[in-house]
Amino acid sequence: MLNKREFTILLAVAIIISSHSVFAQNSDIDSLLLKVTLNKESGGTTRFMGVSSDEGGEFKLYVENVPGVKLSEDNFVLETFEKKQVGVEFSTEGLEPGIYVGSIAVENAREISKIPVIFEIESAEVLFDMNVEIPVQFREVKQGENIIAQVKIFDLTSASDTGLGPSRIKMDYYIYSLDGDALSSENEDLVVDRQATVTKSQALPFDIQEGDYIFIAVASYEKSIGIASSLFKVGVEAEPSPFYETSNFIFFIIIGAFMLFFLVGISFFSYLVHDRNKLVTEMQSYNKEALDKQRELILAQMKVLENKRPDDVKESKREVENKIFELKNKQNERLNEFKQLQKQGKIKELNERLAELKKKEQTNLLFESRIGGLSLKELRSIMNELKKIKELMANIKETANIKKINFQDISAQIRRLEYQKSLLEDAYAKGFVHKDSYLVGKTKLNSLIHHLKKRL
Image (cartoon, rainbow, N blue to C red; front, side, top):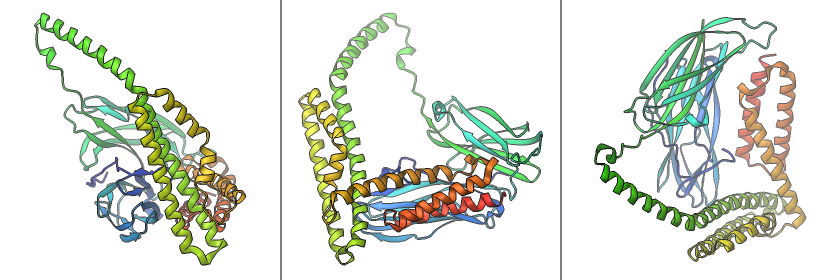
């Protein structure tokens, strides 16, 4: 039986884990969604979400409507530009197989942001599991339209010579709101031999509320229960135009002519301003990405300096704060310069200025982010290390999905994960990986290695 849990959600937290922040008014939360799948006897696991602030201050965290979920810390104070990894502990103790939804609220003096949480608990032994994918064109649909989901079912025992062979399984499909209300449900029997793919189409009500919803698939076979889910968004269908309610042909002609004239004028005006607005928006995006890279490089330099001259840690931190403040001011000056060129209609100069900044991006990163006490050679070495670490963390994140593991050669997969762990430990020993990030990556790899060794 599927379990329902009410919860509130705010996907657009005005603020991305990793390599992937979402920006709020004065704080950052690096997760848009926390989704965890465990089997009944696994006990539990821990995920991490990062909370940071450009201004610092006190933060309070609490879990809403999700049983089995606890936080490692729920109240702390951050310094300016400090980032903290908070452990989110998921436990299956006392819970039945099913899906539990809710949120984690992050509160500071200015705002409350909420991160949606989806906790899937499968049976102790899962023989058939799934992936649910909603095609890009159906991830946002209108009222009354159909939602399309592709469900891939696979036999987890198929790594053996025969697997279970052709097996009849029961499939249940649900659409739930993020308040825990069931909008629709369907079921069917499928015969699966190693794997099968089914495309489900369900019509949404015309009076469905605008917002975010979850498509859920449950595969049952004897005592095995596998669960998978995916989010989608429902937008409001446009109201019918009142012009269609009249039969006055002349009225239509007049209105049509007026609209044509109006649209021609708007199109001409849009043609004049579109390029300028596009370039300013592109500049804003470039500024944000550049500041993120510069901040990362500056903090990495500070780590090296702490090892190089431990007696000057406070001075290094003060220099870092001043450098980031200086960079923000410089970027604001660039943006104001762009806006002035926009007002003057100087599109050519806007293009040339943006192209010049992109061309000199690496040079600017090198010289604008440099803090005292390090040579250019040491700075370039740090940049190379950061690049390698980003590639490593991306590989760890990709590998951490158990459903993407090739079970045909488990020993080779374990050796690859052990190698990734050794690279992570080496990067941490050199001071190029923050302790919290190191623990997150190490926890993911150890969990996956343990899971794979049980299959040997």
